[in-house]
Length: 345
Image (cartoon, rainbow, N blue to C red; front, side, top):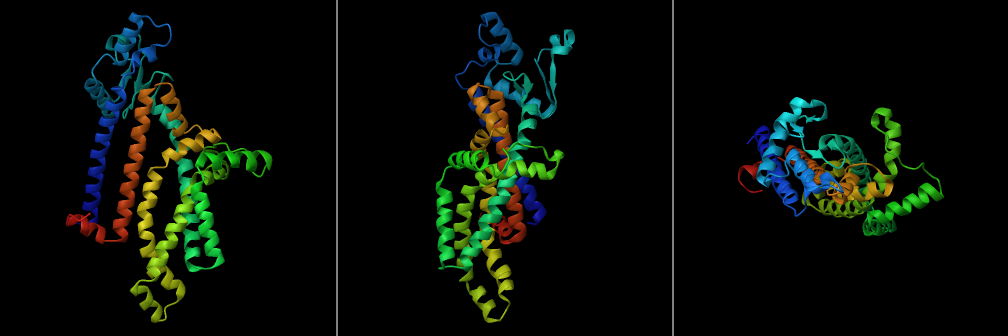
């Protein structure tokens, strides 16, 4: 199977997984024993008003029917309230949600798409900068520790990585905020700045939160990189290359780092895809209005359509990240494609 066919198979698998995730998530949240119409109607709502809200938002229908409406909204868009007569007589109070429509937040009075459009860039920026930080620092320090194996520097790096891995993210965030920002005034109070306002300002507002978010990953990557590099350095092909008199830097790049870092590629993709959980804590500490805070507010306010949208976006991010990592891995190591063709994966 060629690389193109292998990639198409991965894309098809990802689409099926997203469909299954949407169905499971929708059923899980909308089948919960919570009266959505009552929350949408608010306090002091009469029985008749609650019934009218339930009809307008579709909450009086079965979960299967609601998921069907949701799926159609993803494909062709949807009106809120979904009342043809109301759209004819009072179109000014009807909001059209363009495809792919992920629902309507009755708490915020906005489409879930618009809420995600505001929050997703914040979390994506935080995650990408944190990812760059922990990969560069973790891999770089891990290689350094491996090259200095057994030295005081190696022991210091391994010890520091264990200490960084042990501290919870919220503890590191609170300490950094209290001392680095407030008491010592080393950096301004972190605030998210859109990249359209300047790359320097955007990056400056993300450095401290991203370092806090990525610190626990750095600890794990230092230890894993050190172990993988030492293992690769003991392989026969590495010893043969050294015996042939190749330059140490060339031996390190070709015969040590490449086989050692391939396993880290898959791990980095998984960690990046699962970063939303850590982003919830970091965004809460630093007050960033990203997907993390949006999820917390939606859960507290029983805003289930928003929760469904966040879960789907998070799931899509994990699936797409995994597909990209698999594709890069297959490009770097053709044995991955051969294993898939012969059913050994």
